[in-house]
Length: 128
Image (tube, rainbow, N blue to C red):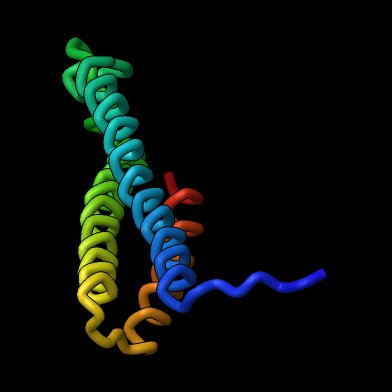
């Protein structure tokens, strides 16, 4: 058995690719959560259940505080996940451009994005 040697650039590219996939997963989790929130919000706005204080008109499900407490934080999370995923992908693109143009890349920048993308992938897929 002999260990194959891989150039430093090739190992960095594969590492960056792994982090790009994580950022893409985060971005897509935001999009998918937004689709689900859109469906829930539209349904909650159309569906009527229970009666208002006048006893004649029915209330929209979205008028109930419990429904608002469930839906609104998820809408906010979908925006947060989407824009965070875009930002991480932009940072990774900058690192990739530096790598291609043979500019130096700080180890701290790579480790920060690695830790962030790893945690974000786990968190966004759990929430979404």
